[in-house]
Length: 83
Image (tube, rainbow, N blue to C red; front, side):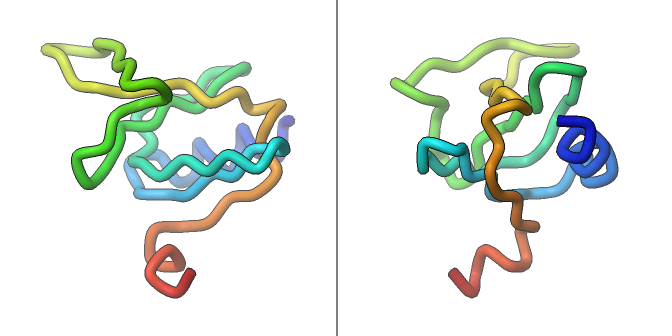
């Protein structure tokens, strides 16, 4: 889990694709990271799982948490165009 925490912190503010161990994929900009979750702001007009969005920071912007323990894969935004 420490590896993905450091990786997410290093790429804060960048668009990434995160794949969970269950196979679910999330694409978004990293807006925050804590010891349990990475928080992604959806890109391309998508919302979080089930259409849920959470408010964070100054003003409201949609984001959703992904558990660091559930991460199986991580790709930077530039790599997403080749998938």
